[in-house]
Length: 325
Ligand code: UFG
Image 1 (spheres, rainbow, N blue to C red):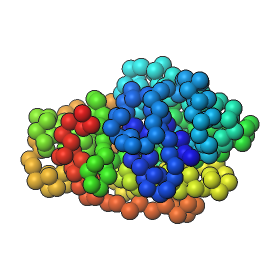
Image 2 (image 1 turned 90 degrees about the vertical axis):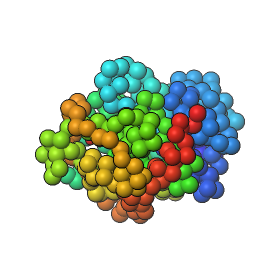
Image 3 (image 1 turned 180 degrees about the vertical axis):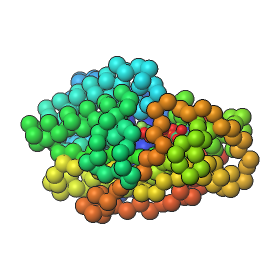
């Protein structure tokens, strides 16, 4: 049995369903602060918080949990700069409670959602796992703090972990039945597609004077189903008594904001009005991952291209214009 914390959120819910499709028994825990009950569908579900030690004791007692896949977190860079203490509480402290419960109940395997934000402004592209770690927000800082906590928990208690540093997660289940629903939405692809649907008047392109070929920022978009595959490989690695690891998860190819706008217009066959706006604070010009390490060690290869990402996201947004509501 696998405990999926944060399994009502975007990446967590899709991974939980892929785990189930792969014949894992899954139980989901989510406080529904950001997650959606409907995204859990018929999986066994506990509504509650990682700070709740009694609830964690009940879950670990009631189910033969072999490993935890931990998505539960606050994940907005800008919000984290405004409210750093919320991020230390909901990310670092909450994970500390989870790890304490795991150790109490002799569960020694965890796959953890980390982020490209642990690197901050990169010195080299593509970014390798041992690049300088210099987070530029409390969000990245708290994810890095958790990675370090996991490192010491391995030494002290034998907790084995795989930290997966996502680059730009995007896309939806291919049938469009589970997808991204954030409030407020800050991510580029949902914003492009909500504009295509007429739910927003226009897209603001945050800066066109970056040192990139078209002046807009370049990111490495990775399909959420490829992320789910990586979690399953990481889990199998730990269940086979593999050592702790940290891996980047990206496609290795960067696309600019303008390239996304052009492709979104083509796929949706809608106009998508857009206007250049000032730069958004804290945006690096280029973020592209090297994912060679997880490819070599666990055999992970992304299956989906940017077009698949946008097509599946469009299948989701066009059939769920108000998300899970
Ligand atoms: N962008 C726009 N207009 C918008 C929204 C985004 O131009 O309305 C641009 C951004 O400036 C950026 C690109 O589109 O250049 C992608 O922005 P997102 O907000 O979709 O994603 P980020 O690259 O900012 O964030 C991602 C993850 C975070 C993670 C961060 C690490 O979503 O969880 O990378 O830097 F922290």
